[in-house]
Structures are given as C-alpha cells and as structure tokens.
Image 1: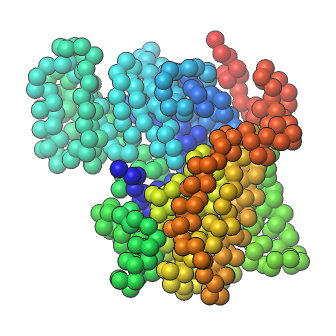
Image 2: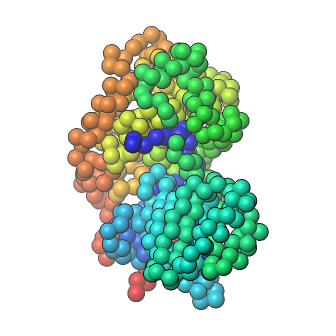
Image 3: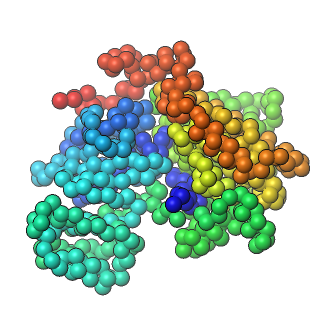
Length: 232
Length: 312
C-alpha cells in the first residue's frame, strides 16, 4: 500500500532545526526513552550508530538527545541549551560511536542509570520526517512509534494476564489501536505493549499494577508538538 | 489523503464548488475525524510559527551553529529599507523571509517543516509576503496553507519530498510548487490555475540536486530557499496573467520523480557530489568538522563539554 499523507505531515511538524530526522526525531526518541525510564536519569550514555554517529554534531543530534532525556519536546525553545542544562543538573552524559548491528542508519542506544542505581537500555531509530520507532528495551525486542499513548506492561508469562489487563482497559473505555506480546522464555518474563487511542488515568495505572502476575506498568503519554498524527 | 492526483483534485473541487484549500480542509475532517475548528486552529498555530521564523533573521543577525551561514536575511532587510532593489519590494521581502527561516533552522531555532526542514523557508516566506504586500487576511492565509498541503500530499504520495530520495527538486521544488499554488488561490485563481502554477515551478526546478556542504542544511540550502520563494511568485504571476503549463501538473510530478531516481547517490543529500564535492566545499567541511583526529579550529566543538570527549 502506498503511504498516505495528512495535511500536518506536509505542513509540520513545528520543530527546532536543522533536521527532522537528526534533530526532531532524536529529541522525540530520547523523550520517549525518558518516559519509559519513568524518571530523570543521573547518568546517560548515548551509543550512536551509522549516520547518527557521523553527523550528530552538525545536526545538533547531541543536544536534541539530551533535551529529550530532560523531558523536552522537539519544538522546545530550550532544546539548543540542553547540554548546559544537563551539566547544571549534574547529569553525567557521554556520547559514543558504536556499530549497533543490522539496524536503521539513524539509530541510538540510550543507556540510563537512575539515582537509585537502576539501569535501563533503550534502542530506537529516527526513521524520517521526525517519526521514530523504539525497537528494544533492555533485552526485549519490540516496536512502537510513540505516535499513540503507549502502555508497557511486564509480567510473568502465565495465562489470564492479558485478559485481565484488556478487561480493565475496556472498563475505562480505552480503545486499543495496536497491541503486541513478547516473552523471553515460556513461563518467565513477558511484556505487553498497547498503543491506545486515549490516555489512561493514574488510577488506572495503579489498578493495572495490582493485576496478578503483573510486575511493572509504564505509561508513555503522547508527546506534544511532534508528528503525532496517525498517518491516514 | 484519499485524493490520487492533481486531476482528481481539480475535478472534485469543481464538483463541490470549493477552492483547493476548503476542499482539503474538508477532506482532512473526514479522514481524521477531527472538527473543522481543531484542524483550522492547528494550521493557524503553524502560521504563527512561520510569522516568527520569517522575521527573526531579518530583525537580527542569526548565525548557524556551524558558522557557515548567517546574517543574510538581515542584510536583505537593510537593503529593502534602502529602497534600491532591482526586483522590487515584494521579491526582496520574500527572499529575506526565506533566508530568515533557513538561518533560524540552521541555528537550532523553531521552524515549521513544510514539507521538510531543509525547505522550511519557501512557503512561509511567500505566505507572509502575501500578507504584508497584498494585505491578505489571516483566514485566507490559513486556507492558502491548506491548499499547499493538498498539493504537497499529492507530490509525496506520487513521488517524494525527500532530498535523499529525489534531490533538491523534491524538497525545494515541491515547497515552491506548494507555495505557488497557495499564492494563486489567495489571489482568487481557480483550482486548475493553482496546478498550472505548481507545474511551472517543477518545470523550472527539475533536476536540481541536493549537495549540501558537510551534509549540513546550510550551503546551498538557504539560498535555494530564497530562489524557491522567487520561483513560486513568478510562476503565480505567469498563471494569474493567463499563462498555462503545456505539461500538466501530474506529469511534472512524475518527471520530477523519475529524474530523482536517475540521480546518482552522490547528488542526493550525501554531501559528496555537486557543490559539496568542490575544492571549497571540501575545505569548508574540514574547517567545520576538523580532520579525522578531531583537530583544527573545530567550530562545532565550541560549546560542547568534556563529557563528549571521553570515549572509554
């Protein structure tokens, strides 16, 4: 099927320049990564692959990535000052060039360490026009765009968890646009990913956390000012 | 967008008695499920960012992060004030606005990608010039943006708007075609005339390669934005005078796409061929990024910090 474009795919996004893929997409990726982490990290290492590693300074990819980790949108006026802001906060930041394997040319792995020592590794690609894809969280391969409010649930791989979770979403009137299920090994850790048409409430997230065998619930709300328009 | 091509767009506009802008807005409502107000206001937000990006570089010297470009919009603004222009007030203003957007973009300022960040100066320059030099009302400017979005969607769906895929003709060429159509609509032209203007722009930008120095969206991109704005306005004037394109719009889009496919990779945003490959182009690249060891007066490292250099 040929790609279809809505009017705001053509006139938009509003963004900090100079490049939709190297700047806006990078900021969006890092902001989603921070959303997955759930809090501001104290230490971040960005492993830059392919075109990202070759041209990142010229396109401000470094500033965009740090801005995203600080929670900024791709259109944030402060994006340009992100390196200074991170330094002021005492955030430990490093950039390294790395071959991440057979991935999109504009790919970055973001390794974050939280204040309590918790670590998380997130890999994503900037696939053009500011659009992105998260492809890996820690050791789990997955795929989501950040174009929808996204719910990530880790659980033990036992029967009934999916049914319980979807039932709760149904009760709150939340419609699921896309969903996927992954597991590392039968009966061990598993992960559910929902891309939703509506945001979920904090109360709902608390209820989801209480579902038997659910270990962790992360909700990534829609980032504003980016291409968040579903491609028509 | 569920409209296949320019021919279908003109037919549908005619059937429903709508301008392209009105038709596209209605189409977007149907396809997105959003209300007219929601869609209109979002486009109005884009117009407001355009008002900022077109004037920032005229009011003050905006210099790119690399230092490669900057201050040219300001120079044109001063020149405009002097009243000594060759092409007249409207053209000089449009050029200054286009340069301003490109400079704002390259300095990591806020812009609207339309259709891309690299070509972000053309449509805003033309729209804001129309506002000031022809006293066009805000709602008509917004409808002009919808018309240009429709043209852009047809180009993107049938060809490409990416420099990496089709060269500069796909980015600045498309932006100028979109802008030309918007001007014709704003000046009261028919949907058919809008497409003639788009076709004339493509005929005049066909074959334009994407050859940025050091891969940065600066040289020659900023001046190509200025040229794109001029090309859009001249095409609009021709069409408003009754001139038609012998090659229909849809065929020019096909031609642009096929020329893009024939372009070697070195001329498609790789920073290798064309101007990027010249002696000066290579020298500038080296000055900005340094040699392989990262030595030399590396402007890109000015405000970076030690953390970046630790690589263990």
